[in-house]
Length: 140
Image (cartoon, rainbow, N blue to C red; front, side, top):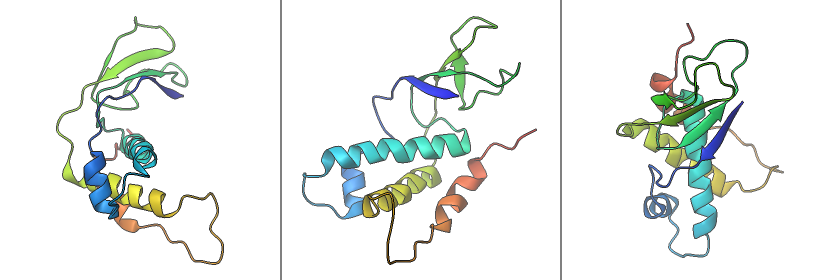
């Protein structure tokens, strides 16, 4: 299991960029949009194992395996053999396709705020997977 110990203080997509993407011109949904930026970024990070922000995590690996970390690049800060494994991420520049994936996920979250959709056909946008695919970790 992966848990955030110290969350990111900056996101790869700003509130202003998100509002422009969503065509939102008011401030009534700023807190909601901010939380959705975090959620969309976390989905992209976990789907790709690619660190997009500086944050600290604790990870309880299954079995004896301690590498690779579930999100990289990262630096282990706990002692060898300690469980959970504590680590800090140290990302580089955020690739444009992953920023675009965050924005597409954000648009979907903002447009579909309820757990269920009735009376419509809901189809996931395949572009999100296409944007993330080159960054997904290949299992050995």
